[in-house]
Image (cartoon, rainbow over all chains, first blue to last red; front, side, top):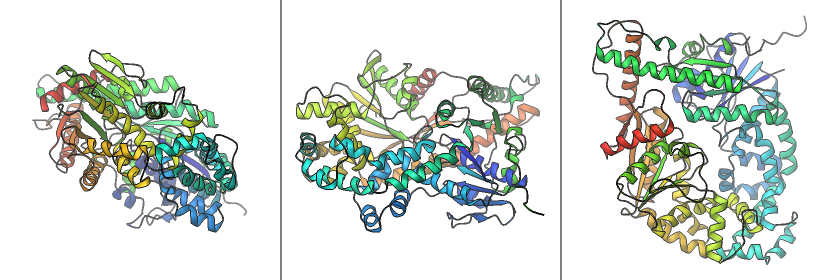
Length: 352
Length: 281
């Protein structure tokens, strides 16, 4: 069975690099590993063996036999939902609709849904031992995990019900309700039969419901048995986000396997007494970075205690790694993220 | 800059937008202004930097002359409908409000105009000397700034369309509005800041923006001598400094705020940034 490792956390904490590093280290432990990455910096993409043509098809790494990489593309999310789950003529009408783009931008869950859907497809393919997923920047919290249900809820008519204030209308019913007070108010503010145009769009969107709901349940099942890692730095904003994962993930049947504090400064700086003849500027400099290191160390200890979390640290590095050894080196001292600690074993060959 | 009537503070997520907004608000208050600072997002950041537990839709006075509120779209919508249509007894769960919320999800710019419209309404009412919007991140700010124009394109007639006109004018007026982009001296924030600046220049929705770069380390005016932690910390500092200078050189003229070392509470951070802003503005 293919295992999934979901790498989550706030934006800007180095999630993409950490995902790549975990992928490389699992590949080197003998697991056939696919890394699904979101928007990697150019140098990171080339470290993963992805050239200028970043594609959504898994690409075998030229120098690392167990490693594959592919991009997660969430920009086409609603388009693919329409094409997969609606009749061809409805799909064509949907993708050309003036509200289509706005709705997909206003509903970030749709991007998470598309990413989760693609990730699930690769897990189901069964061609890898493990699929490491760099989850897209979330609108906040666990929306990657709730996206399938949110998406089904949306296309299933929640908006339509709100719009008409009653049971789900048929197309003809809707035209008759256009004289309803609610809609008259809306039209007097917005003008130009905007409501009717939106409702037409939502009625078309609703035809995708069965497909989206069925697929959503499959995706949810995969997500709930994945291993989730939460990446953060010791800064307040990403820590708050990491805490939300620990608080909310159990609601969707998942518990984070570890929290990863990226860019951690050396602890031996804390309390170090420089020799008396040291340049004052250097003493001051050590003192201020030691105070940073202490702040980080306190933050890690507090997080571990409050959330009963397995805490892994990845050291600060001057330059983000640009090759396989550099990526693997990031995790050289991080016991908590080895294949064994994550309980991932190479797939045994079947048969003789 | 504090002589304007509205500051729209944006930036990539995690750069310290809320801390800078709180710092600017404190500075303006110290200069004798009556200030409203508006949290347009859903993070707890601004409240913490102002030293309060939470913000709500109705402004609270967090210290003399410094008021703060959180923009809650459903409340803002109800307020709008109540004012515009003289409708009474609306609450956020009413059918009208929910119908609008549905619309706002599907129709472009409706959601954004309700948010930015409330901010601009506070500017127009002249209850405050200065309104500071702790605005959505740069990835989304374009659709907010463009909302008045998008509305005009979407609906050629109607009440919202008529209001979109003055909203757009207020945003464009250099005497009333200043756009502030907070950045960091790192690759991704710098890239995003440059993209945003280019987009803003093309679209002419706001006057020329000001860039504030947060968390800049000073130069270490000595060589990395010695050994052990003394040397390692010096090398570390040097590498951060060199990296930061590289990204700073890619930005147009900007204001730099210092890196704050060690454990500080959110309110201490805001106070220190406010002092640093006073020196550099």
